[in-house]
Length: 199
Image (cartoon, rainbow, N blue to C red; front, side):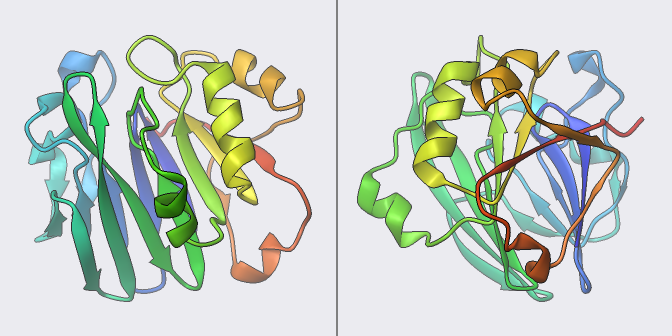
């Protein structure tokens, strides 16, 4: 599996059978919008143009833009609606190649009950927005990481990830893309991975 980062809460996850793209944004964000082909397209807030700019995505992707469970091309996606101050944003559990990724998209309030979290099982990779402002601040994000205890955490939505890295103990591994197999996830503790956005 490969994980690439476009910026904001947009990622490309490449499995053996499918390419998944999450939350493509438009140029109004000031960033270069995601482009490329996808087999599965995940939108956490389909009414918000900042996270649903699909014009740059080619192919005929299977759309996941509502809560529920979806299964296609060796990938299972489970969407959970999370109440926010201005409505609902979906977070997604993405499972493929025996790896569980929990994508918290662009939430500001982690309004999920303990039993709902427990029902998701052991999370291997957590994608969490840490920029403050409209998303989680570094301190709150680090508390959520400690509650979930993933093997790897990937911050998103940051201008600089320094505050979050400091909250997480000061160690992080920068990389252009994350290449991961299930057998690589045996280490104790949580590793912080900072992905360089694709341009």
